[in-house]
Length: 92
Image 1 (tube, helix red, strand yellow):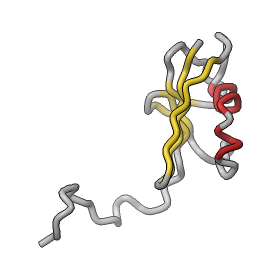
Image 2 (image 1 turned 90 degrees about the vertical axis):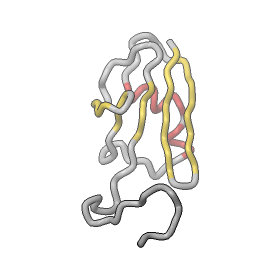
Image 3 (image 1 turned 45 degrees about the horizontal axis):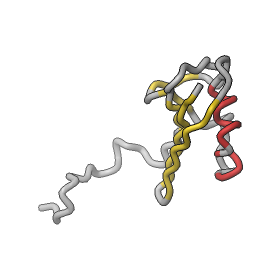
């Protein structure tokens, strides 16, 4: 079956479409994708993973068309960071 594997860093985003066996789990897809070789600093013991934005465990079974996502750790407290308005203008 075909699934996607996605990972994003500030300077690079990757989305791979790969074939996995019908009984594949999330970890199987991540390993098969080769993404751990491209980004050796990914630590699946500490980083969260999901399927279509929903957190899942590495042993979660996949279905055809799923998108496995590897999430980076949050490095700042979202409640202390000023919000950006998204318009690129100067703030008053």
